[in-house]
Structures are given as C-alpha cells and as structure tokens.
Amino acid sequence: MGIFASREYPTRRPISLIASFRRSWKTGQLKQDALDIWHRFARFGVGPALVYCLFCLVAFISYAFVAHVLPDYESPLSRAVLGAVGAFLLLNMLYNYVKAVTVNPGQPPEFDFSQPPGSEGKLDLAEGFRCCARCGLCKSPRSFHCVVCERCVLKMDHHSLWICNCVGFHNHRYFLLWLLYLGACCAFVVVVFFGTLFETVLLARRTHHSFFGRQCVSLSWLFAACILALSLCSGGVHAYFVITNQTSIEFARNYDEAVRLRGEVAKNPFDLGGTRNFQQVFGPHDFWRFRWALSFLAKRPAGNGLQFPSLTEIVA
Image 1 (tube, rainbow, N blue to C red):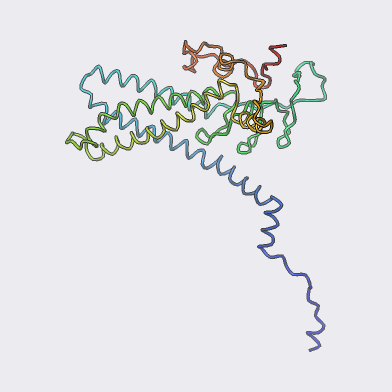
Image 2: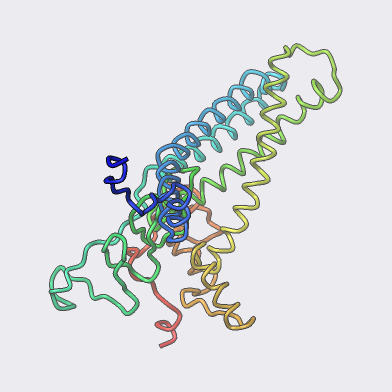
C-alpha cells in the first residue's frame, strides 16, 4: 500500500490521434500537406504516365490505319493521298507536342533592386511588378506561380498534365497548335476509318479483316471520336482566350471582377484587337497565310514575356 501511495501519476491526458488530426485540419496544415503530396504526384507520376499513354495511343491508331484501313482503298492514288495527309497531320501534331513538353515556358529572372532603374543590365520595371511570396522572384503582371512545378511562369496559362509542363509564354503556341493538329488528326481518323468500320462492324460483312483487326479499327475510331469532342471544346475555349488576349488565370480573375462589379464588364487592358492579340501568341503573321500553323517555319512572338503592350499605352 505504501509503495502504490508514493507514486505520482500525471494528471495530463495524452492527446489522441483524432484530436491531433482535427487540430491539424482546422489549422490548414493537413490540407496543405495533402495538396503538396498531390502536386508532387501529379508532376512526377500522373504527368509522365499521360505522356506515355498518349504516345502509345498514337502508335496504336497509326498501326490500325496502316495495317487495316489503308489497304481497303483499292486505288493507289487514294492510298497515296490519304497516306500523305495522315503523315502531314501526324508529324505536325507530334512536333508541336514534343515542343510543348520540352520547351521551358519561361521564368522571371532575379532582379537586383539595389541598382537604380535604367542602369546597365537592369530592366526598367513597370508598375505592377511584385515579388513572389513562394519563390522570391519578381513577377510581371501576367506571371504566376505554379504550385505543381514550384516556380513562377511567364504569362502562365495553366499547368497541363497532358504535356507534364506549364503552358506559358514560350510554349503557348506549341500547345495550341498541338490541340489544333490533334483535333485534325482525330477528324481524319473519324472520317477515313468510318468506311471500314461501317462494313466490318455495323454491317457485319465478311471481309479479310480478322477479329483483331476489327477491334483495332473500332477502338481507334472510338478513341478518335472522344478525343475530337474534347479537343473541340478545349480548342474553342482557348481560341476565345487568344482572340481576347487572356490566359485561363486572367479569365477567371476578370470573371470574378465582373461579379464584384455586379455584372458590369471588366476591361482587359491587354486586349488590343483580334489581329494583334493573335500575333502576340503565334508571331507576326497574317492569319489567312497560315504560316503560323507551321511552327517550324513561323517566327517567334515578339517580346520577352515580362512586359506586354496594353490598351492604355497605345491610346496614350
């Protein structure tokens, strides 16, 4: 009895795991940790997997076209024309896709604020430049910090998992041209594959195609039709952004500003008109000459990604 009576037991109760979890959730630390894990998984897991899947899908549809669809056209001229058109669309789609994946979208430099503006090696910073709270770089008004890439991006539009990269100033046109040629390739597959699909699957006629060949044609047509619908929707949205000289982030902010102003139209200071807006993305080319569509021949857009002409500067 004396031994037990002399012991001192702590009066504080240990914090349970549930209470610790609730406190971390309320403070936001647990949410931030979960978001950080997802961002790293998206960058190093989902993104590369989607790039690999896209190349595999392109290889599968190309095989179905060469092995099971093209031989159905008896005329050598028809096969030559279809093969040339398909190769042109495919090569342009792959070229722009690789460029969108590999080209650095652009990152703001580190500015030395100890030097006066206008000195040698010093940019004359316009009003609206600010310091990023996450990476410490000085951002231009159209630059934003990507939480997935963990860096600031010049004229950031969005982070695309399909290219495992950010869409920014230097690779924006490659991303848009990839969407354009992707839709064109899918439309080509939907039209050209339909004859073989109609005879071998819908009419169930006996042809030289094996069961594997019929499945290849059917799956290729289905994949192409679905991707065509998605590319048309996405391409239409991005075409509107190009015409109005907005990025996805800027559009969301302008929409929020319009709601704040109770329905009044929020003015976009970078909207210089359809032609100038188009040339800021695709380079100094006329739309109807279509040189901009051949990115390996087109000129690069003017500018450095830090400063952009605004409507107020032109009017003034």
